[in-house]
Length: 141
Image (cartoon, rainbow, N blue to C red):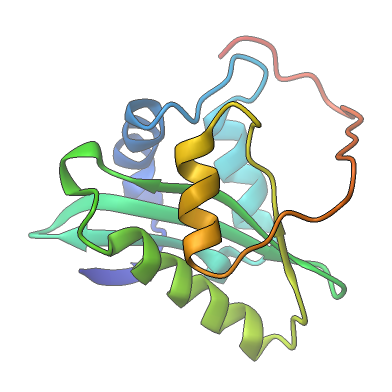
């Protein structure tokens, strides 16, 4: 798999991948999420390609205290081939280069398969409560 930073021409393929993987929610407009990311550390938004087709993505972030992983996705047809580990590892390496000491991420409690994937690559469940406050309402996209 070739891993490279997201390019504007990747938008439709990435959104389609996210949709295929069940990552889209009506309250998060993926186009707005992409635009927001391109304003803050776009070098941490990666895509993975096989035979020229986008089959994986990860949107990483770092604000100086913790790194974050969002939108980690692997095409259903390409799962169980190590591509998730590979693109996550690329994001982790970039976060290490930034001086990031720890990565956080959120997974819905009902998504046991994804929780097990993250455990298999060294993540542990932290004893915390995730809170959120919406500052902008995207509405249905």
